[in-house]
Amino acid sequence: MYKIGIIGDRDSVLGFLAVGFSVEIADDSKQAALCLKKMAEDNFAVIYITEELASQITDEIDKYKDDMTPAIVLLPSKDGGVGLGMRNIKKSVERAIGADILFKNND
Image (tube, rainbow, N blue to C red):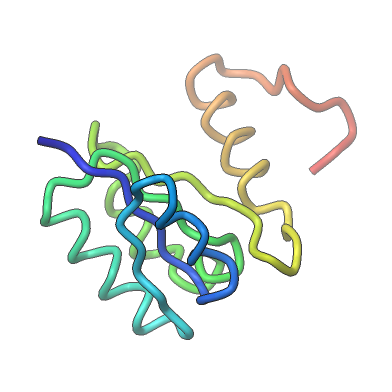
């Protein structure tokens, strides 16, 4: 059975317990990388991670980019987003289609 989890700072992710997510609290890149690895090994289908932490562990996240699971989705933290999630979507679309069809002059 697949699971859904989220990794991030306490204030950003604690509310996800109410909807049944497995929550991992990480305050730095080392903790986030360990949580990501653990969740991937534990058969999580989807792992949400705050953009702030994701920007610090891009090499770890890239290890899973070509795998079917886990799907790693970036979310803004309680402090807002840094645009990393949207840039990743843009890169994925460009890779799949071969052209930037989402944004004209935006990065």
